[in-house]
Image 1 (cartoon, helix red, strand yellow):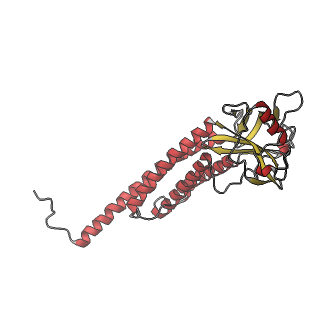
Image 2 (tube, helix red, strand yellow):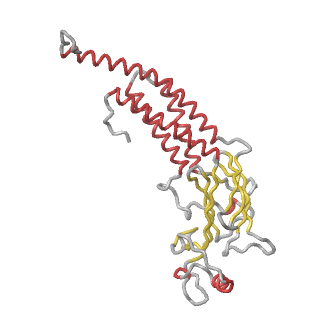
Image 3 (cartoon, one colour):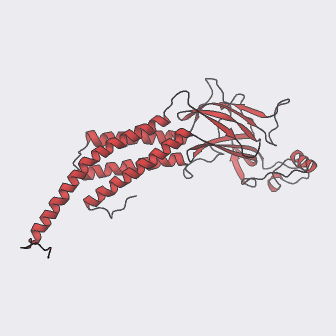
Length: 312
């Protein structure tokens, strides 16, 4: 049996009916997006709570793999590290006389600089911006204006992506360790001049890099510049040869850096990471929110007839 309409609709009537149908679909979608925005706000508030400065905070264990080079813990409250105790055993950082390791403690003095994790600060700022976008879209804008809703959802999508990226770890646009090491007076007693500590976030884990450095013009006992040697001092090389051990090399052993106004090379390097359950939960929630917003954007573009436009 034929499915053709008879008498056939005129071309202009068919166009008018299609436009009316699209208008009804768009109106329905815009109404449903209000519920979606309410759901997104609830999810964003959960993410904000996970990053909020709530006592007693998260205490994370730090321990180097397959060695005793670094042991300790740090306590995070919101975007700040408020407590920490670290013990180092590095060839180029001899401990004080009578001590088994070199101990570092985050200073409790009110005048000490605050340790702020900039990536968490960025993530919190972006999540708060997302909440502002949701409120502006729901209460102050024209809920029936498809172009306005589309631009707001795009902004929301971009902010969520950037917030998730901050918790995953950024490589571009961030300072290197040599420009962004912790202030020596953050610790009590202050860090020695040849020690660098650098904190960052990677895959919702807090990553600590510890480096000891030495000047590039330092010479070994054989008048061979340290920069061209293995990176060990004469005493360390003598100890290594005497005990039969092998020196440990790292990926920065033969690179030069500018650290606190001087050109240096890294002698010892230790990397330790500790997964933070709150950050992991926040990153997972942001990933789910990102997918939901992407689906809403796609649906709106299809109904508006702009699905082929660039969605960067």
